[in-house]
Image 1: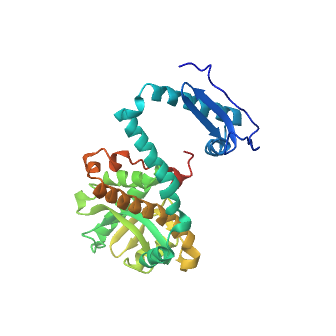
Image 2 (image 1 turned 60 degrees about the horizontal axis):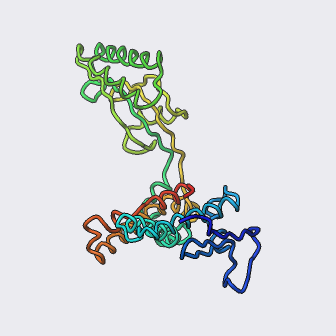
Image 3 (image 1 turned 180 degrees about the vertical axis):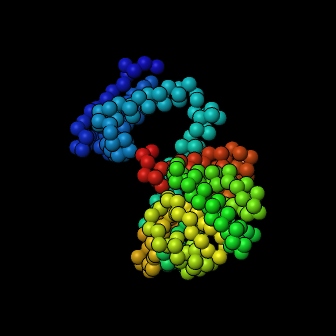
Length: 310
C-alpha cells in the first residue's frame, strides 16, 4: 500500500464543512486501497480536547497517520490477531472507565447519605479538643518516680544527660529522636533505673494522661521540638512534640467538602471492585486471567483522582 491514494480536505478548525457527499462536517478523507475513512470535525475537536497542546493541523495529521497504519493492519489481516483483540479489549475497558464509570462516581454524584454516614462514624475527627502527638524518653523506677532521694538525684542526672544529648544535635524528625533514644536504654542499668522510649500517639490535655504530664506539654505551642526535662509522679520526661492539632467543632455542613474529597476515591474503589466481580460472574473466562481483571486498567481513576492528563 502507498500513500499516493491519500486525499485530505483541510479546513479551518471551528468552521463547518458540508457537502452533499457527507452527512456530517468532514475535515479529511482517507482513501487507501479499498478503504475509505472520513474524519469528522467532531472527531478532530474531541482529539484536540484530549490533546490541548497540539495545533489543529498537527492533530489532524496524527489522526490521519493512525488511520493509515490501521488500514495497513487490516490489509495484513491483523484485526484477527489475539494480541490485537486483547489490546482492543483493554482500550475499550479504559474508554468505559473514563467515559462511563468515572462520571458516574464523580464527586458530584456521591450520594449525600454516604457523606452523612461518614461524618457520623468519624465525628471525633471533626469534633475534638486541642491535641498533641508526641513521644518521650522517661527515666523511671518501675514506672514510678524514685522514692529514694539518691536514686531520684541519679534519675535527674540521667535525664539531664538525655536532654543535653538532644540539645547538642537536635533531631531532624521523630524517627531520629526514637532511633537515638534506643541507644540510651542502658544508661540507668548501673543504678537500677529504666530509660524507656514510649510512643504517646495523640492525646488531649484532659484525657488518659496525668495532668502533671499534659499541663507542661500543652504549654508548648511549637512542633518538632524537644522539651526540657520535667518531673511527674512517673519519673523524669524528655518529650518530643511531633504535631499540634488545633481544636475542632465542625458541623456536617462545614466539613461536607472535606469528607467528599476523602470518600470519593474509596467509593470509586468499592464500586470498581463490585463491577469487576460482576463481570467475573457473567463471563467465566475472566477468572482465568484473560478478562476484566487482566484488562482493567485503574489508571483513568488514578488520573482523575490527581488531576493528571490522560
